[in-house]
Image (cartoon, rainbow, N blue to C red; front, side):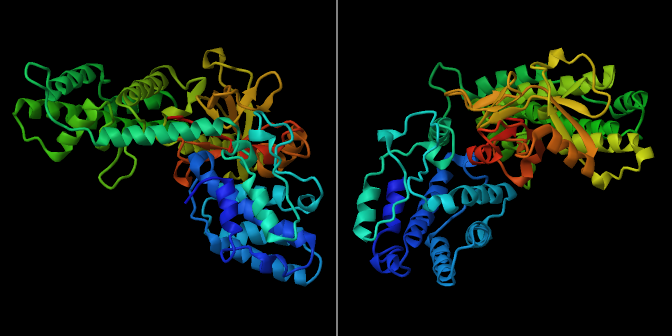
Length: 503
C-alpha cells in the first residue's frame, strides 16, 4: 500500500473502511470527531515509524485496522457514559488495544508517551497541532498538522489531501537525521541483496583466482592472530590479582575462556581453509562458506554464530572491523591480566557486558556489608563525567567503575550544559564521555535522583550491545540529564539510546 501519513489517513477515512459519515454522527460532539481524527493520526504515525528500523520501534509490530477499530468502539462507549477519563482512555489505547501485541518494554514506554502527549485535553483545544514547537528543519510547505472538528466526512478527506507528500520525521517525534538513518538502512539492504546475487566463479585466464586471494588473506590473518591463552598461565595471573573470590576476577576468567574459544576456532578454520585450497583436505560446506565470506570481506557465519544460531563471538558487518575488534579485545584482556584492573573499561569489548556490571555491583555491595546492603536492593547509579577521552582517566574510582566506548543514537551530549542536546545535522551517532557506573541502595538512589535531576527526572536511556534493539542485547539503563525545554518524553519519542556498537 502507499506509504506516508496522507495515504494512511486517507485509508482510515475511506467510507466502508474505518471512518464514514455515519461514524462521525454517532456522538454529536466536536470532541468525538476530534478524537477520532487523533486516533487515526496516531495509527498512521505508529505504522510509518516502523520504516526507521530500531530507531522507530525495537520490534516492528503489525498494527492493523482491528487495533484502531477497538479504540474507536471503546471511545464511543466511553463518551456515551459521560465525561471522558483521560487516564483511562490513554491506558486502554496504549496498554490494552495496541499494547496487547507489544512485547518489548521500551516499545510499551514509547506508546505510552505518544498517548500522554497526543491524547489529552489539549488535543481538543483550538489551534492544537502535532508540529514541534521549534522544528529543527522546515516542515514541508510549512504545513500545520492540526486536529479538525469538521462535521462532514468530505471535509476531512479534503484536509488530509493537503498533507505534504513527504513527511518530516519531526512529526513522528524523531530527529530529521532519522531520514538519513532510513536511507542508509535501505541502501545497505540493496547492496546486501546485490552482493548475494553476484556469481561465485573463479578468476579469468591469467588473473588471480578467488582461492589465491583468500589464501593470501588467511596467511595475513594467521600472522596477526594473537597467541593462545594457556589456562594455567592466566589462572596464575588471576591469583596474583586477588584470586577467584573477587567477582571482577571471576568475570575476567569467564571472558578469557570464551575469547580463547574464538581464537582457537579462527586459527583452526584458517589453517583448514589453506589446506583445502591446496587440495590436501576436503572443502566442506563450512570451509566453502568461509572462503566466500572472506572474498566478500564479510565475517564467516561460524565465527559469529554457533551451530544453533546463538552468538559465538561478536557481530560486525565487515571482516576488517571484526578482526580489529578481536585485536582490541585481546589488548584489553592482556593489559588487565599483566598490569591489573584498567582505569576505565571498554564495555564494547566484552562478551557479557551485563556480567561486568553485575560483578561490579557485587563488589560495591560487599564494601557496604556493615550497612547491611542486600544485592537485590542495589541498583545502578550513573553519572556522565567530564572525561572526553579514556586517556584522561588517570585512576579508577573508589567505588564502581568507569566505562567508555558508548555512542548516543538519536541525541548528543553537551559537555558545556551537562545534558542531552539535539544531534548535529547528518551526524547519526555522537560519542558519550566516560560514564561512571556504581551501585546504590534503592531508597538512597531514588532520593539522590530527585536531588540530581529535579522533579522532571532524568531520561532513563537504554544501553544496548548492538544497534538492533531487543531484550537480547539490552544491558542496563543510564540516567541522563535533560533540560526543562526538552523533558524525558521528548527523548523517548526521539528514540534516543546508547549503543556499544553502532554498526
